[in-house]
Length: 156
Image 1: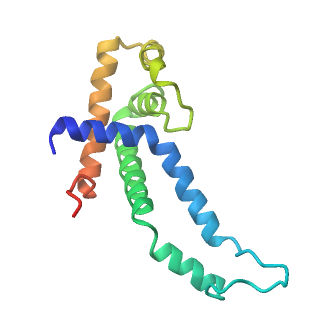
Image 2 (image 1 turned 45 degrees about the vertical axis):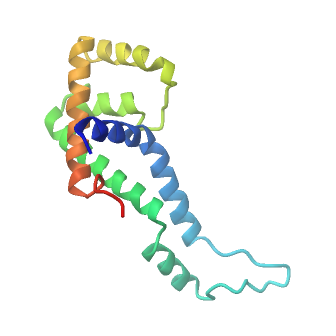
């Protein structure tokens, strides 16, 4: 996998971060929720112990969900590193990452990417070129944390 491919994959997962968090939360809620009963009040033929059922589901999530969790972990680790780089600045790397990629769930349309970048550059008192330099740094830090977790290894 080339560096350019890693950057593309990383950006795609950054844009999907908020959805990944929602998916994992929904999965965990469904695991810890009660199973539906039929009209007789008897539960289905699943494992009758809800704690065991929850434990099994949490111990063996789907492969896709596990990948989402790894990406969430990698992005969270990168955000902690970016926060250290910000050294308390309000409009630093974490602000840029959160607003460019919509990590807080506030998405923008693809057509609005350049408008969003210009707005964020203005808010951060940066030129567009400087903003894109910081975005490159952000993506490379996420790539590092993703590579640490084996997210770029070939699937067999």
